[in-house]
Length: 189
Ligand code: AMP
Image 1 (cartoon, rainbow, N blue to C red):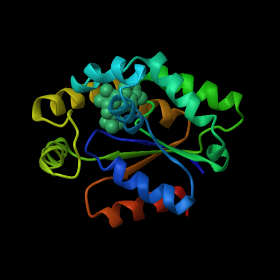
Image 2: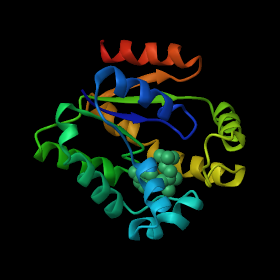
Image 3: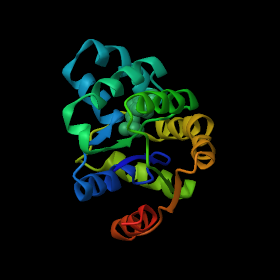
Image 4: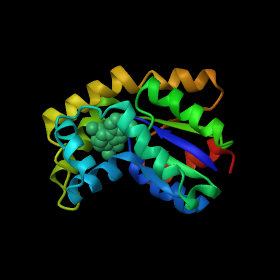
C-alpha cells in the first residue's frame, strides 16, 4: 500500500494516518513530525526550518524533497508507506512522482480529506490549547496563515491527482471511526 494523505491542516490527517499505517503495517511518514524532531534536536536542518515553520510558511521544495528521499530509502518502506504532509506544492508532487517512478514504486492512492473551514479553525484552536500537543505554529494567526498557504499552494494538488486517476475524496466531518471507515471503503479494503 503506497498512499498520500491530502487535506488542510486540522482535517484530521494525522489521526487517520496513525490508523491507516497500523492497519496496513506501513510506516507513517509525516514531514511535519520529521521537521519538528529536527527543530527539537537542534540539528542544522532544524535551525534552518524553525522560523519558517513558526511563521506557518512552507520549507523550500529542495529541502523537503531531500528529507523525504532520505526517508523513503530506508528499508521499512519496502512494504509501502503513507505520506502525510507531503506533497504540499505542485513542484513537490511532480518531483515525488519522478522519484517514486524511478524507484518503481508509484503511488496507488491519494486520499483527500475535506472539512469546512469553520470546523478546521475550531479544531486548530482546540489543538492549540490541548496540553498534549505542543506546537508553536498552532496559534490563531499562524493557523490562518497555514490555511491560506494550503488553499494557495496545496489545494490545487487535488486536480493534479484527479487527472492521474489517484484521487479518493473523503468527507472528513464526523467521528474518527466514521472517517476511517470512509477511507477504507475508498481504498477498496
Ligand atoms: P504539518 O505538521 O504537516 O502541518 O507541518 C508543519 C510545518 O512543517 C508546515 O507548516 C511547514 O512549515 C513545514 N512542512 C511540513 N511538510 C512540508 C512540506 N511538504 N513542504 C514544505 N513545508 C513543510
